[in-house]
Image (cartoon, rainbow, N blue to C red):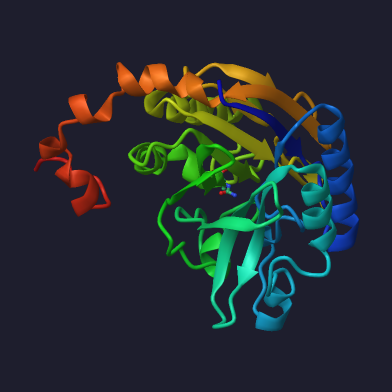
Amino acid sequence: MRMVNLAGAQLGPIQKDESREQVVRRMLALMDEAKAKGADLIVYPELALTTFFPRWYMEDQAEVDRWFEREMPNAATQPLFERARSYGMGMSFGYAELTPEGRHFNTSIIVDRDGQIVGKYRKVHLPGHAEYDTERAFQHLEKRYFEPGDLGFPVWRTMEGVFGMCICNDRRWPETYRVMGLQGVEMVMLGYNTPSVNSQKPEEGLEQRMFHNRLSVQAGAYQNATWVIAVAKAGVEDGHPLFGGSLIVDPDGTIVAEATTEADELIVHACDLDATVFGKTTIFDFKRHRRIEHYGLICSQTGAVPPA
Ligand code: CDV
């Protein structure tokens, strides 16, 4: 058995005027609770340090850039790195990254139990739009503020396993999990900020939206025989509700832990990475069963092209 005592640290809402330091204090409280519960790896949401700012339309680049981190760790996040290291706990969290070259990404990192950043992922599937949309009840401007990730879907051998990351909308795409599955991933860590209301389909109920969340994560786990942890930022941010439902899914596709609130909440589960072996050597033994001669379209076109 290769055990990872996994904690998902769901964050409740972060208002626009909350500072990084205030948020980090909440993250530290969840880390303390995780330690008390025996966790050795903690996962926080997408854009964990601030409100979900892409809902706000901004034209002034300086105003945009104040939501971004120019280095990691930095003064505000250093306490997270220090405490995780003192606890011998790995961690992963998302933040808005501004590179020295002036590029903007929606990023997450994996930090090992010695406090070293061992991996970085930049969100590939950016939802939403780039210009103000008068038709929407609220905006989702990720395509305005971020470039699509340029690092692909790498995995890392660390903490006695094979770990990968993706971010929010990526979880809805089977390609995300399969590219990591083809590198033998054993645990996928992801964070999300998902509005409780679909701005383009307001009649869609919350239950349906949460069903799609579970469906995507469970399918990705089962079809690639990997653990998946998905962690929400939840609750009402400046009048805009985000759903919770953070969950841990085993390599059989079964939910083993799920959050019940829309507040700061910890979910924990003892995950055996060797539980991935059965799926990877039977029904999803890729080497024996995949038929790549039939999959060319997946990498040669984006949009669907029905027959004439
Ligand atoms: N942050 C996200 O990527 N949110 C999307 C919403 C916009 C649908 C998601 O897939 O949850």
